[in-house]
Image 1: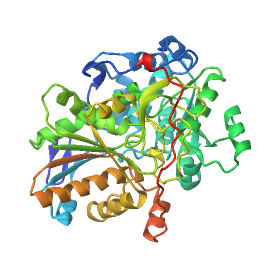
Image 2: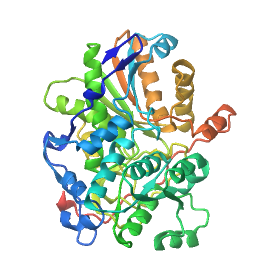
Image 3: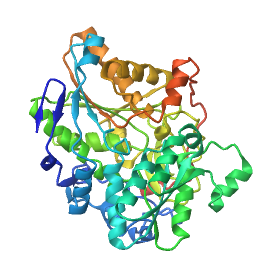
Length: 453
């Protein structure tokens, strides 16, 4: 444990021993998932053919702290965790701001993002149950990479359905997955009935996370000894990611700082949730006065323009319905380079907290995000993932507001992954060819049971 002028490090003994479950501290229970057949609260037993049993139990748990198994704890050390917290001094100097800017750097593990924090947990629980095969979806490829690595670590086989737009934009991610032993398919694919149907309707379908989820679920339930894994959205996934926020708490204590603003990007909500929920628990108890800011793509404005209602988590309507902020499960996502933000809905926990006013959210265009990412790269040296670029846009704008108002805020954000496999997007930006998309047509869900709130 220690710090210098730039970096704050923890020892491996400082890795949290428990995941934090904010469901124990919310003002009220979040609305339950609904059975897609009956539109009534689903019996968790029905989920056991889709997910490992322990993950289903964690999904509905109200226990505040859930012990991290020793095998997962050892895997966190292997990654390695803890990850550093940096002070962005060069960025501060460039912006001439009185704000103090810190960022958690989750891109230091072999997969290059925060995703292994839950991938190793999910792979472990499946292996412990005797499951041999895992299926999943991936947007930009960070989750697919992480699960492929975790599957190899625990001796499992993985099949990954990667959104077609990202599959073509980021071939390096496919190569990473295959090198770790996974099979990666462009979604919609010819591997499932649903994928074949969509291919016949539109051979150039750019895909979406909703489509890829449908394919991965279909694959899981039609093959023996196979379970589905999810990289974001669900309660247990956000809970696994809370190792991030718990580490940040310790790191800020070392430099005797309290955050005024906590910022993250949101696709399904896992990195933002993992980063901020330990702090949100303190806010809900009156022990912290801070703002929580979530940043999304203006092309997929699921929280800034979404409707808070029950909706399917996938396009093929195979999953339970979740109460969330959504653009509609059939929303056609444009092919932006921040593939991890191309999801129609938002995690129920994050949706609830935004809807209740505990969190704020803002949407940014591709070029505005890459403007910020380029400034960050030239001052801090790290080329961020396109997803993280969105929160960096807000951080820079907030730092300028601090300069204008002469406020010395402590701004902390989660730099959730690197952009070293997204250089084609940076090439388009550098050449002035990066295209902006703006969502104008939405497919809000209409089949809901409001009395099941």
